[in-house]
Image (cartoon, rainbow, N blue to C red):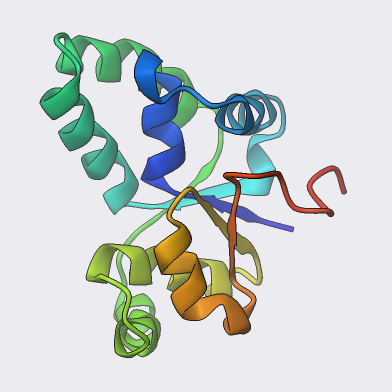
Length: 143
């Protein structure tokens, strides 16, 4: 299983008031098993923007904290015509363009988009490409 990681998880690694044990477990596994993880190219930009808005040293935290994540071997997937076409389906279901790219990537890779965004997950829950980790990690997380 390929796990597509949402920016809502990554920002919790760096914002003390937003920390969450499930986000920490994702980071730990991502660093130890990078081949099981992917992010769309917009992930970096989203995390950077949030950190710059909410953290007093946003750029420094991003540069130092995200470098190990971005360079550990995870798949960083570019925006392509086929991904955009797939994302259009999820936009029709009510997702934002950003969220639709995460869902489309999960579908394309036959994986699962992990997010803290329960509202987005509920909009596409029947598609079985997303999982909200607020209350727990997926059953097949260890597999």
